[in-house]
Structures are given as C-alpha cells and as structure tokens.
Length: 164
Length: 196
Image 1 (cartoon, chains in turn green, red):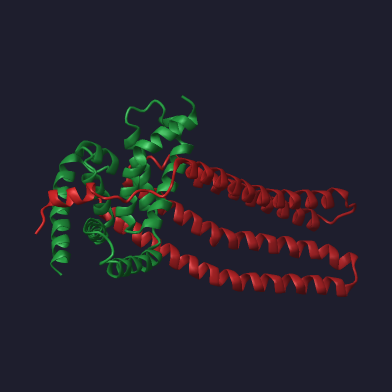
Image 2 (image 1 turned 30 degrees about the vertical axis):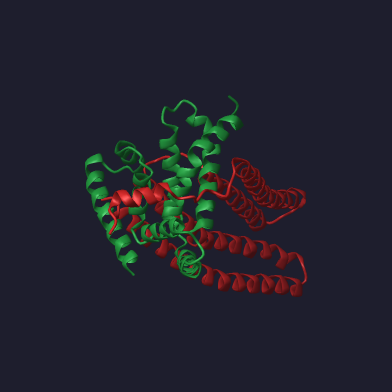
C-alpha cells in the first residue's frame, strides 16, 4: 500500500475520535480542527515509523495528546469559551435537544483539568483502559482511580448545569 | 439527574465531526512544508551571502592590519554560528522523537525547549551582539588609519546608534520573552503535576 493510501485509511478510521479528543480538550470547534490537522500532519511525517506498529491508533492518540498539551494559548481559549457560551445561549431555542446536550457535555468537559479532559474523552470513546494507560503514561491502577474520580466530577458538573 | 452512562449516550449521539478531509491535511502538509523550506532557505541564503561577502572582502584586500583580520574572523564565526543555531533549532522543532514519548516526558521536553529557545533569544543574542561590536571596533582601527577622520567618526557613530536601537528593541523583546517563558513553564508545570 502506498503512503497516501495508507494515510487515507488511517485518517478515515481515526479522524473522528481524534477530533472528539481535540474538541473535548479545547471546547472549541475551530481549535479542535486546527489541533486535528496538526496531529495528522505529524502522523504523515512519521508514517514510515508506524508501518510495522501493531497499534497504530495508540501512536496517533499519543501524538494527539502531546499536540493538545502543547496547545497553551489560554487567552485565545478563554475568549473562545465565552463566545461558545454565547452561541449556546443564543441558539438554544433553534437547535435540537440532542445538539444542546452535546454542547453542554463539551462545556462541562472544558471545566475539567487538562489531563482529565484528555482521559475522559478517551473513556467516552470507549478505549480500553490498558490503551488509555499506554497513551497517557499513567499506570493502570492509578488510571482506574483517576477515571472513577473524573466520571463523578463530570456527572456532577453536568447535572448542576442541567438543573438551571 | 443523569448518570455517566447517560453522558456516554449523549457523546455517542453527537453529530460533531471534523471539517477537514484527508486531502485538506495533505494540502496543509505541502503548504507548511514549502513555507518552512522557504523560511529556512531565505535565512540560509542571507547568511551565506554575508559569509561570501565577508570572505571576498577579506581575501581580496591587501595589507590588512591584524585587527582587521581578527574582525573578519569574528564576523565569519558569528555568521556560521547563527546559521548553525538556526538549522539546529529547525531540526529540533521538526524532530519527532519526543512527539511519541509519554506525555509527561513530552512536557519535560517542552519545558527544556522553551528554556533553550529563551536562552538563544536573550543571553546568546547578547554574546553574539558583543562579538559583532568587538568585530566592528577592530575593523574601525584600520579605517581610522587608512581613511579620513570624518569617515571613521561617521562609521563609529552610525554603528553605535545602530547598537543602541538594537539594545532598546532587545530589552523590550527580552522582557516579553521572559514573561512568556514564565507563563509557559508555569502552565507546563501545572500540567506535569496533573499526571501524579
């Protein structure tokens, strides 16, 4: 398989999950697209190293996580968060209930700490714990405790928002 | 009240999908590759042109004083150092070995990279400027003996003014870089602590 065909296949099977991870991390659609593009650009540059890897998705996730972590433009992010909030409020009546719930969920994820956002996005995408541990570099035992705590925190934030 | 499984259902019901296709990513790769190459090429050509110019003047001038030889040597060393530093920096940015390391190690690398970059833009730039200043001073010794006095004075005055302007600009730049570095290191340390 040539490089472009392989890349196309990898992109097709991983882009949505990577986008969700980036969206969960930034809470912003444009920034998520930028981070996803950065991630796949790096994947392309390192594709030859992946060819013989059994778990390509783990490496792609690792690159995505590191790309997200190096995204440090807080000022821009805060401005966009406010913008996202106002969009949510203004369009509340127009969009479907489902869309509202998803938007609220992303908003709640954005209230978590950075590593928590990354981990919970992978949990929501149903990645096995062993893979999340491999990607994040957190031991599996420690990860289980962390996940339990994050799940509880996220549910609490969501329900708090939903009440109002 | 929703439990975590309900949140999972919401997550899986989302229609949000990337705006990018794989063709867009490939287009982006080609574009960034060419802009990266252009920047590198532009800076390398500029520095190489300076190296050639200095070499030509140096080797084609007869009866130069030892101070002038030393000044050319310093000029050329500075040019080579700048070229080397730029190339090493670009290689470090595009290097992928850290990209695939575990996030905690990657954060350590980012911290180290930021500090190195800061050092290059501040301390090393100051040393570089001092050497360029010494090279100019040494060069003006020959000008003093071989040209009219007013030419030497004009040359020295122009160089001093140029250095003062650069010093003021650099002072502002260094302060901003310091603030940026502190902020970045603080954020990276906060991220690092989240892994424990």
